[in-house]
Length: 234
Image (tube, rainbow, N blue to C red; front, side, top):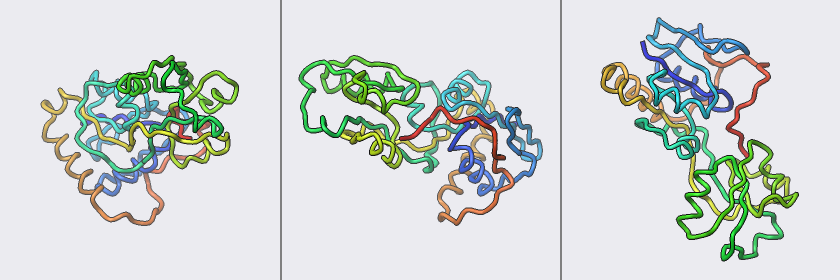
């Protein structure tokens, strides 16, 4: 039995659709607002539904054999896990943005304040460029920081850029691209090598198939959980 950590939020639906596409169909995985563990013995798996930021932790420490999470989370946490597969969906980017009126100003010669929920990625990025930076850690509404004068710039996850535009912000630099990734516990890779390898092989084949129009899936989570993913996109 493989234990797989899946993250709540926008990645859950395409993740479950991918499993169906790979041949792991089951009608028993029906999400609700309370259940977090879904044993599926008919396919030899147990699914854990956790917050995106917790997926690498569950996998690294062996509570889950595998997990699916965004590359942005992996870059921020730098967890000791094996990353065999880019699943391709959930595409977005980690970007630096400023108020439109300040986009043409060069303030990189002096210390700047950057608001973000990605402090490690942000510090690493600016340090590599020799730019002194003061990082302000926020957990949400990052776009508000430059508007009220809390920060000179922000580093946030951007998908369409519509939220930036709505707050008169413009993207000035792209730090990294992010898509959903399959991660594996290093011990599980050895102890459950056959089962893990088979799953990776099937998911890789499913990712390589031509994109088809979406259809109802027996694994699609139910509505009305009332919870949002902490992996927000601007």
